[in-house]
Length: 229
Image (cartoon, rainbow, N blue to C red; front, side, top):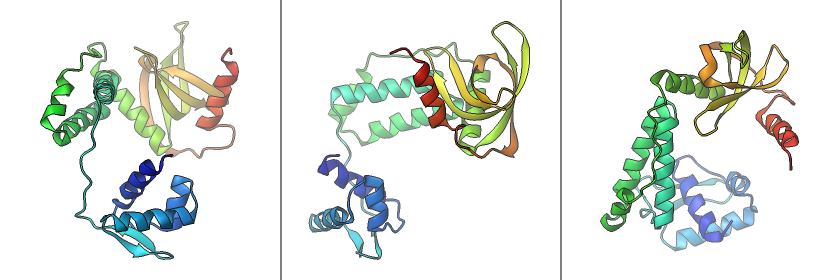
């Protein structure tokens, strides 16, 4: 990580308002305590109102704000396209969040740069994403974040119905199709399920505890091993 990027990250972490120790900052940025002490001192000398001391912790005055970030044309295009894709194919909650995010970005850009947002001619039409699908995406995403077991009624590729209890791990978008990566209690193994084939979906109150061999990192390792090189 470049030093300029590290200094920016330190300011961002301190903006939370919570006291941050040099140890916690060093762990998050993967540098030594000595580097954090030196960076904080340099930030203070440059006028950033950081309060605190070594051995106690640091925080940033709440009324302090950093200048708006500047984006080049390609960065703006990437941000706008990403937001448009989320708006088109994401769940309803994320779609609304993407819209708010792009409005906030526009609000802090200078007028000359703001005009570039409308110049981005990259679109992601989402008229095929139904409200029902978006609601299922929200429910599955929330369940994965909260580690709640989900019960689904599923139609397999051969047309046969199936009922499964799953530990949702992550959602993946394959250019028109969403799949849920999950630990399946019936098969006692990882399985992927197309969200559009879920006829019934219920997030249960039951919480699952990630175990070795059943976590997202394990799923990704298994997928990589099956992928031809």
